[in-house]
Image 1 (cartoon, rainbow, N blue to C red):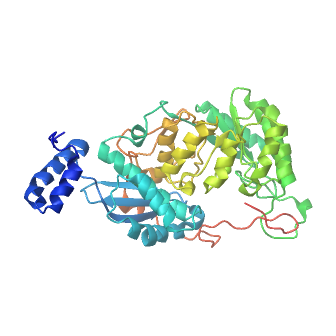
Image 2: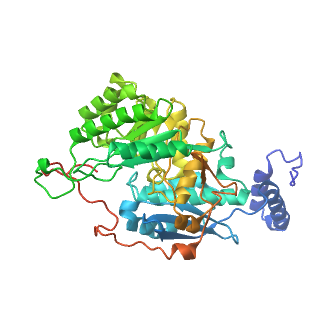
Amino acid sequence: MPFDMPAKFPLGRRNLLKTLASAGILGMLSPITEKAEAQVASATRGVPVPKIKDISVIETAPQGSRLTVVKITTDQPGLYGYGCATFTQRADLVKPAVERYLKPLLMNKPTNRIEDIWWTCYDSSYWRNGPVLNNAISGVDQALWDIKGRLAGMSVYDLVGGKCREAVDTYAHADGQEYEQVIAAAKQYIAQGWRHVRVQVGLPGMAGYGAQHGAAQETFKPLTNAPLFEPTYQFRRAIKLLEIARTELGEEVELLHDMHERLTPNLAVEFCKQAEKFRMYFLEDPLSPEDLGYFKQIRQNCATPIAMGELFNSPHEWSPLIDEQLIDYIRCHLSQVGGFTPARKISLLAENYGVRTAWHGPGDVSPIGHTAHCHLDLVSHNFGIQEYTPFNDRTQEVFQGCPQMKDGYLWVSEKPGWGMEIDEKLAAKFPFTNPVNGLNGGWGELRTLDGTVIKQ
Ligand SMILES: [Mg+2]
């Protein structure tokens, strides 16, 4: 302790200074006090706490998907951080949410107070727990963790407890218009080392999820020109696929399937029951967030493992499913829940109830966000599996230090923070463009044969 307190001042240093101040003699001691405070700061922190000097947004689409990243610059030379704020379907709205609302709120705040800043952002809009705003908060939150790591010279996974496994086990996507194409793709992944494979088959004539559409069937005679989907058709094709996959791929491989919330609740319960005999690793999103009450029926009827949560934005959605032990895997989208900080809390909550993690991680997450997944996967004892889609060479030139894939495992950079750098000049060469459907990144419509619009 560089400032030794004489025993004759039992009230403590703070009260002494107050007394001296009221007596008007503090000015005489202030140089000494300042020196002592500086010594304390130096001994306990080593360097002054960085403050937020600027917040900017990087928008880039090197792989087609619109990726949004927040950059926080500090008042210390060369110290900055990146955070993923990606929301591909409403990408243009995140940048103003960051620059016009969070930036004025956070300028000059100390970067070390991540928890305080998270709550400040969260409360600032009064109405909360929604997409866009949560994405914006996520970008800030992850950037602050990056800064803390860089400052400490440690990886984020080390800052929050250290690794409890060597690398991150992942599952790959085996897709195809027809069953044999899916099986061939799955066999390729297994040969490359994957132990977990998600299987999705197309619906001929309809817009299935996770696979190319097959040729149209003239027998449908739809009352609409929009892309089609019929739940019972999907039901039959998917159950058949699981049966073939288990037969063709053997007992050892872990099978996953994404139901993508498209069946009616009763049909979803029946699907989970029928899938039980295929010994799935998990069935993903059997129900939409609007139908959470039906999870009890699934639980009461079968032991098929259930994964849920990529659309969740609010603790009111995931908390009941976890504490009633109605799901086996929580798979929120990190930027939709507000970043690394809330995701870590979700992971810890889930750990207490025997629920494992399987964070949502396809191409609509930036490599920064995907790296944040991996850091969380490494430190969470209740980690289950990580969804994986590859980043192409161009993306890895923009985002340098991406996790590396080997034998189905992802290995993260050991450098401080997220261990990543962004080539911002190169990122600027891949601006957002309006895709051919003219919907500015938004999804189109999906209808049943009679023309009713349904969830995507
Ligand atoms: Mg999904």
